[in-house]
Length: 420
Image (cartoon, rainbow, N blue to C red; front, side, top):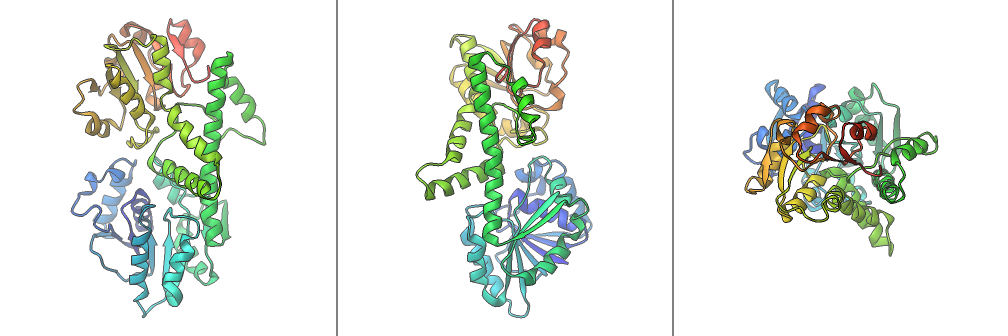
């Protein structure tokens, strides 16, 4: 089939790559957002594992082409993957599609608009076609795999006539599908927000418990095992840490908290969002207390600056708040990350207090503390003796509870975890 994708978001590029890989002819209209940029210069492509290579491969094979003109390319299916603040642009595109009287229009929307947005777009399209909402399950770092082999797909549609064509388009991605749920567009939109909100609440709750465990002398990892063993709770999204980040997850949570706030005086999710921003400064506060606020001139190393392992993105990453706080106290910051150093350098390259290091062990010479912020596998099993010898002060502040506390203390480290 011929698919026309609209958008410059990560969701748009992932859909383009995956739809082309299974044989579709895909034209992506970037709506001027990435006009004249090489693919390698577009951060959402560069930062996502495997996406740049896949897009280049599909372009070489002739299944992907780019367009940045404000015009409509005739296609079998039109795929909207716009940013959450681009609803007016979506309306404009729908208006242009409505003019294609020679064919029945099918639009698949993965846009993170508000509840009721799909129905509104449908009203603009009228009898010219159908708009189907398909919530994206995109997880940055594994986005290609998530699109290609989803475990579940939700389709929100208000006219069953569109179902057969959408199912045919998605058939190549259904080999490991555990469930296809069909519901109204409003219910699908609400479900997407509800799922994201629940995950955020779980993360917020386990972080709140970890902070309390710190005060009560309780090891949260033991509590975590006890909670996870209960079948009513499970272990998913139950790991305490120094806050969540990322562009999409943070955006979804923030947007839904705003929806709740608009319809209620108070919102539990709004509290979670606010507390998460406080949680991002947890490691700095632990460092501050350890040195009684005397941080000026200290040398501190950061392991992991991306918002999560597997991604080069630093969007809303806890590391940013930590670095800002350290700089404000006159601390020399040494940073390492397997993928995100270029993005960090673009942000802090002009800061004399921040240095960027390719080797995560060499950077530890004479540091006064090591903060583990993102749990890349590279950091999980270091040479403890070498680590100890290099550091001027053997202080480890583990923001993801990666290390074994007893092992660290046996090797002479002052170890501070999250709720441990």
